[in-house]
Amino acid sequence: MTAIVNAETCNGCAECVQSCPLDAISIQNEKAFVDPDVCGDCGACVDVCPTQSITVS
Image (tube, rainbow, N blue to C red):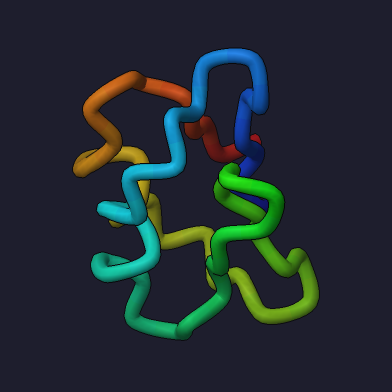
């Protein structure tokens, strides 16, 4: 399982980047990008995303 970003609704605010304890998220092309090899499936990014663009599955 890993966090998945919906690029259609992500506004690139970087709240998820700041919340990720594993530094698995970066902003690329003005959208959040999750490195699946680093993501620990904790869901911290899901809780802080103001556009509800991140899910863990």
